[in-house]
Image (cartoon, rainbow, N blue to C red):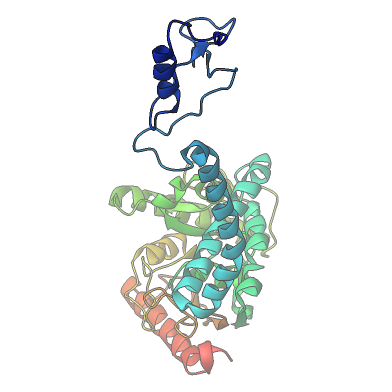
Length: 373
């Protein structure tokens, strides 16, 4: 007599056949026992095949092959792709910089702006320790001078002896682009502050650095406020001029001018003011009509005017064509006009200065590539 199997009840041979068929029929799911010690309702309920073997898990309908590893493979592939991109980015950017003039223009302009913001951020705390003074302009000038070497621009100056005047005076200069800063720092005399639009004052650390350096801000939208700033500056120049004449020389003294608050910082004698009389950027070769602000300032202060002309940048720089290469530029100084208002009307003075600037500009434009001597 056959011995009864431990997992089947020895009732009859028919029961054994049914049990065997249940285990070996194609596609049939085997019955399983609960693993000893497993609690009901566990993840697999401790299901085991006879003999303790664990049943093979079947793939869920619609599941993709290898879906169990997708959570690991996808982040790894993304990380590998990112590393590859970082490795290829520098040589690709360098190749694009050399082959694409617009991309080169964008890179150089972006670097110029970043340089201005960085130096303003770094130098502002140092300038703040000294207080608002025109002497801080020396820090900005020293920080801007290296830019011309980075861009491969050679600046030449003709007529610098025109700036060796005693006492205060007003400088008028044409305005083409932000690159004028490189020409400005080449010739700007000591104790000279620029006159700029008021919007510049709110450009973060750049505006703060300009304010600490004594920049005179003009609100072009409010005529009365602009006239008041010009009148206040003229009073400072006139007071400085009287003191300079009383001393008989142009040496800078240690005494500070009184009554200068708000738009103009307290400055020692021999203050000079740099003005862009066109009032806006003009990349063309011809000059725009001069605004009256600079001439009102010179007439009220009774100080001379020195014209400064920077040659056109069209040979190596064009914002319209998105072109910025290396090149040469020239800064020329015309003969200083006499004290404004002495025997000449303001309109005549404006015409005379504009004509002088145009002649210097024409001479620079015909002096060779980039207007260089």
